[in-house]
Amino acid sequence: MCGIAGWIDLKADLSNRRDIIENMTGKLKHRGPDEEGFWLSENSLIGHRRLTVIDPVGGKQPMVRRHENNTYVITYNGELYNTEDLKKILKSRGYSFEGHSDTEVLLTSYIEWGSNCVEHLNGIFAFGIWNQDKGSIFLARDRFGVKPLFYSFKEDSLVFGSEIKAILAHPDIRAQIDCEGLAEIFSLCPSRTPGHGVFKDINELKPAHCLILNREGIFIKKYWALTSHEHTDSLEQTVKNTKSLVLDAIQRQLVSDVPLCTFLSGGLDSSAITAISSNFFKENDRGQLHTFSIDYTDNDKHFKPSNFQPDSDAPWIGRMSEKFDTKHHYVEFDTPQLAGSLKDAVLARDLPGMADVDSSLLLFCNEVKKHHTVSLSGECADEVFGGYPWYHRPELLNCGTFPWARSLSERTNILSGDLINVIEPENYIKKRYVETINEVPILPGENYEEIKRREMFYLNLYWFMATLLDRKDRMSMYCGLEVRVPFCDHRLVQYIWNIPWSMKMLDGKEKGLLRHALRGILPVDIVSRKKSPYPKTHNPSYEQAVSKQLMEILSSKNSPLLPLVNAKKLIKMVKRKSDYGKPWFGQLMAQPQLFAFLIQVHIWLKEYNVKIL
Image (cartoon, rainbow, N blue to C red; front, side, top):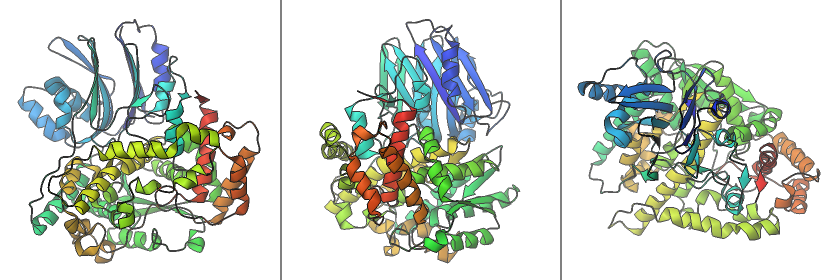
C-alpha cells in the first residue's frame, strides 16, 4: 500500500515543476513512509510514496518499462491477490520479470491488455500508468473502491492523488466548497456521494471505473458491475461454494514479506479471518498469528446491552485467542485520547467523518503499526451477507431513503435557517437515493420483497460499505498500516449477490448462510454469536469532553462553524445533557458523536482554510 500523485498536462512543459510534484507527494508520506520516487518529463510529473510490503528491492516506484518502442511508467497503490496467476499467463506470452512484486505484474498486464487489464485483476488498487510515447495516462480503481483515488481536470490539465490533500497541494487548486459540497457535508456526511470529492473541482474516480486522458480528450468508463441472474445452486452447493470463496479470499490475502496480523473482536467475521489465518500460518510454518482488539477505559462499568450491542467482546476474544493459539494484544483508550484525536481523524480523511468512530480506529491502527505493517479485517461481511437491522425490519426495508441516516430532523434542527434554504437537505438526500435505486440491476420476475432486498444490498454496497472502507483506508494509512478486507473480494460479492434471501437467512438468523459455511472452522458458540458492531465508548466522560469542546467553539465568536449552525439550539442541547437518543447515522453515532462531528466540521473549515462560495 502506498500513496500516488501526478500532474499531466499535454499542452504545457512541466519539466521544471519538480517542486510541485514533490510537495504533492510529500503530503502522502504517511501512506508510504519507507521510500519516495518521481518521474519527470515534459508533459508528466508522477510521484510515489511507498509502504514496503512485497519485494522490497524489485518493487520500487514509479516503475518504468520499455516495450515495443513505448515507455510505460506506473505509480500504484494497492495489492493484487492473483499475482502468481497473472504472472504464469504473461510468461506464457513471452514476458519476463525482474522481481516478484505485484507492481511489475500489473504494469506488464497493462502492456499486454491495455485498458482491459483491469478485468483480469483480483485485488484492491488505485493506479496510474503513463505512456510517454503516446502521451496518454490511464487511471483505474478497484471494483469496490477499497483504495482511494481523486482527481481534478481543468483545461487539458489532470491532477490526481490518493488523497484530497495531495491535490490541494497543487497551486492551481483551491480549498473551496459550493452549495452542493455543503449538502454533502450537512445532509449525507459521513457518507459521500460516489464520485463526489466535496471540494469544488475535485472528483473521486468511482469504484470499478477507469479514466483515460490523451490528445483526443478525457474519457471515463465503468469496467465492471454486479450482474443479476437466477441462483440455481442447491442449498448444499451454495454453502459449499460460499465456504470455498471465503477460504480462498482470506488465504490469498495472507501474502506478505512483512509482519501480518488480524483484527479480532470475537464476532463472526473477524473470528473467521483469524481462524483461517491462524490455520494457514501453522500449515506454512509462519509462526504464531498476532491478533489485536480495541476497548475503552471503564467500558465494563458503563456498558449497557442493546439491540445494536447485545454483549461485550472481551470474553469472545479470549475464547478465540485460546482456541487458535494467537498472541493477542488488547489495546485500550481513555476519553482524553478519543476527544483529542478528532483533529487527526479530520486530517487523515480530509473531511469531517465518523467522529470518535474514526479517531478510535486511528489510535488503534497507530498501536498496531508499532508491531505490524499489514492486517486483515472483517469489514464488508454485513453488507454482503445481510447483517444490518435494515435488512430485517420491514419499516427500514421500505423507508424510501438511506436507512442508516433516517434521523434527518436530528441533523437539520441544529443547522442555520440560511444553510437549510441553500442545501435543501431533504431534497438532496432524495435525489441521491433515487439516483442509486435507478442503478440497481433488477432481476425480472422477482417479487416485491426480493426487489426491495436487492435494492437494500445495492445501497449498502455502494454507500454504507463505501463509507466504512473510506474510514478504514484513511485511518489505517495515516499510520502507515495496510489493512486488507477479504469479504470485499469481488468474486464472493458477485456470488452472494444473487442468492435468495431465504438462503442468506438460514435458520432465521442474520448472515445464516455465512454461519453455515463457517461450521467446522469456528467453535459452535462463535458461529451462533449475535452480531455486535465495532465497539465504541460508553463512558459518559466522553460526552462531557466533546460537550465542553463544542461549547468553547460556540463561544469563540470567530469560528467558521457559527454561520452554518443554530448556536442557540446547540447550546440548549449541550446544557440539557439529554440521553444519547437514537443514532443519527448508522448504529453507533448518537448525540455525543453529533457534537464530535460538529467539532470536526469546525476543525476542517479552519485547518483547510475552506472558502465557502
